[in-house]
Amino acid sequence: MSTNKLLARLSRADAQLLERHLSPIELPVRKQLQAANRRVERIYFPESGIASIVSNGTNPIEVGMIGRDGMTGASVVLGNGDRAPHEIYMQIAGKGVHLPADRLREAIAKSVTLHHVLLRYVHDFLTQTTQTAMANGRGKIEERLARWLLMAQDRVDGNEIMLTHEFLAVMLGVRRSGITTALQELERKGLIVHRRSVINITDREGLEESSNGAYLPSDANS
Image (tube, rainbow, N blue to C red; front, side, top):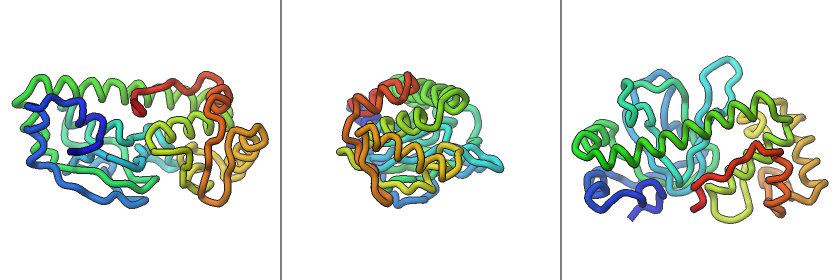
């Protein structure tokens, strides 16, 4: 049985519609799960690791995050065409299960309850992207970084997040030097300990305070 939390919410009957089509897959760093403006061929349900939804432009920036709480292929669930506007790729390695997009479409056509559960997830995901847009537009780098680290911790086991400064800079759409300064400030406050490619969260409550309201708890860790 998959440990993906979205799949775990399905009724037994709905789960059976998908199970025979699901295959396990390793999800290494940088693996592309969805290409921008290309036909969505496969749907991924991560069981570990984190995938970023990245805007398609000259200066890419993360607009959403998917972990064990969700899935790729929101456009398929919404039924608004077979192409998606954004790229999705793994930023923290993990594993998961996947199936052809056409098999998901067939299952949705057979089950209203399955479609309802997936639509609820897409609604929650769109709420996340709205919050991300607000944080990107209004928040200071330190606040945005605190929010990002909290969201990442919601989707991994433990307190360690393995990620480079360079990758964080791309995700937040800022200079690497800005990320370095923000990390140093969070560490000065005793909220994290960071070394090359590893960030250890030591004070989650303090990190929430540093996000200045930009972070809202989700069910990703429930």
